[in-house]
Length: 272
Image 1 (spheres, rainbow, N blue to C red):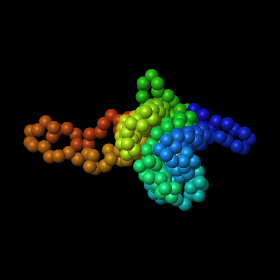
Image 2: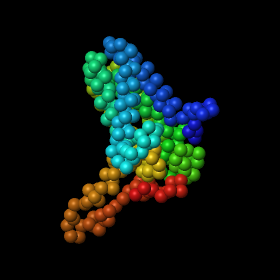
Image 3: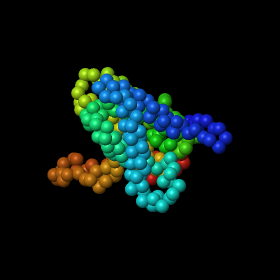
Image 4: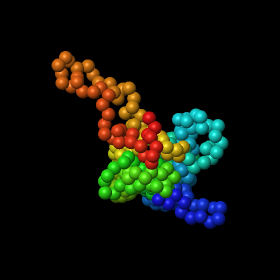
C-alpha cells in the first residue's frame, strides 16, 4: 500500500487521485477512437469524459450526503476527497454525459456504445488507486493464499483479507477486452447491454467477499444488496403445512457471506 505516491514539500500526490486522473486520460483516448470510428469527431470525447467525471463526483458526494445528512454542515467534508457513494456517481455521471451529448448533437446510442469500453477500462484503473490507498474497499477476512493485510492503508487492518480492488481491476480489464472485441460485431445498444450484464455480474460476484462496515467517512457504505439482506422482507418465509420439515428451518437464516462481513476488521467491530 502506498496512499501517497510522491511528496514534494507540502505537495502530496495521492495514489487514488493520480490513478483517477490516469483513468480519465485513458478513457478519453478510448472513447475518442470509438467516436472517430463511428463517424464523429475524436475531440467530442473530452467533453463527454470530463462531464462524466465531474458529474459522477458531484452525484457521488450528493448521494453520500443524502445518506448522511448530519455531514451536510461539515464544510471540510464537502470539499474533501472522502465520502462518496458509487450509485450516486453512476446517476450523476450519466445525466451529465447525456446533457453534453445532446448539446453536441450526438445520438444516445452512439454516445453510450462509444463510452462503455472506456468505462470498463477507467473502472479497472481506478480500482488500482483504491488498492494503493487502502481506502477500506478491501474484502472480508480469509485464508486464501493471495490474501493481504493493509497495515499502512488509509483504513488499516492487520487481518488478511480479500484484496477486492485487485479482483475488480482484473474483472474490469477482462470486460474491456470483451467489449473491445465485440464493438464491431454488435449494434450500439447490444454492446451497451453486454456491458451492463458483465459489469452487473462483476458487482454481484464481488459482494460475496466485500466488507460492509463503515470504519471511516471515506469507506464505502453497505451496498443495496447488503441492505436488502438485512431487510425484514429477506427474513420472511411462506407458511408451511404442519409436518413440513422445512417449517423447522430458522426464519432468520443468514448466509456465510454476511457472517464473514460482520467480523471485526482492523480491530474495529462491524457497523451493524
